[in-house]
Image (cartoon, rainbow, N blue to C red; front, side, top):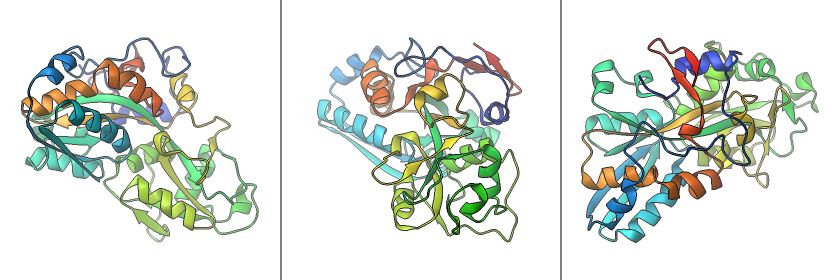
Length: 316
């Protein structure tokens, strides 16, 4: 039984299930920064010392792509005969690529069983790297700082269309979505929409294929609203909103008061030596400590929750 939290169980969490999470720390949630879903992180130093060579293709979720890119650069510096090629495309793309052998690593912020059939999932290994919070963001000129979950639901289903309806200055709400297949979108919709869908006649002003393009679009569009992983938050470019009065920050994910979050996965299939060495490095104390926490993520094993076979959350 996995120690990871499935999206099905995440929906119940977002809907208000009381879950006892780990105690709040200054950064992160608890004492451990290793994951049960990957190889022993102590192996990373041995792996890095070997004369490794080869290319690792890693595609998928953009929500934690900057973290993986930073780690890959350090890994390449320590292993000059290794090249790690990192591309985006979203969680669905990453999972399809690793399934089909087009990539050695598929990044995803949803569990593989939500995108692939059971036969394909059984062939993959889930390396759960970290946890990331995700929250709503708006164009800097929007004079709203806090929205309830119900208000967000109304906006992203087209029932609320003007900022004056949620306490702001009158003006059209411009919804910017991620494209279908995005794990960030799936996470946000699970927490906010609770399984409902927008009516067929509701169309966002844009659907973007990466977190980076969402940042660009939100800056360019007056009255715009979207959502991003905390790792992309930048108050010089846009404004992050509170949800139900709770600030979107890692500490509040840890203490259970902020409900929009996901595990970040790096799926592999029959990993070769260099691929496994990079996975081990991602789970090492070096990455799980300063790099993960320094970019606003939470080491995965610090989220003290479990799921049973039906996806029900239980306390660790």
